[in-house]
View 1: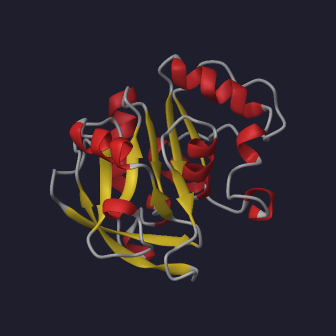
View 2: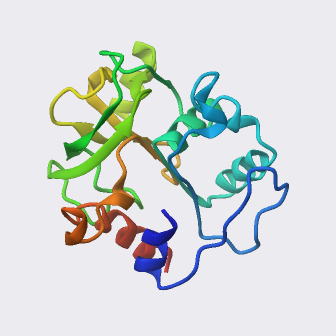
Length: 205
């Protein structure tokens, strides 16, 4: 994530430890990367959602600061209540690690403005707990409000309605299981993830 941000913005991102109680001033974007917070020993992201810095992340999001959570970051955002639903064990109970096809559902957000609605892109996934789950009312609301950013073109992990990424009601928080930061240049096998970062940079400039 740090490499992608540096590559596309030309600036060194500030690195913030989860036990910090303050964020740097003047932030344009908070990126919560993938990984295995606390070893995923409880529910994935559940313990990290209670890390001291998350209070500041929530306050920043409420003020309109953009927040991007990828993979474990998406799990943390749901556990922290910044996004609805939850990420459960994959339907086949297997770790999934491969490139997958996504369909862009909403191209009107800060995060997806460089894509076309209905466009198919290829982004890698690497997760064991990526099965997005929510009650039917929540799913219907996400559909009706256009808050589903990305869907899997084919089933990957059992996610309800093939959801791969969603935004909050305000549109400044995106959580997604696939890793756009791993697909920012042809040497990575493709550059479909690059436009997500470029769109954010353009919107925040």
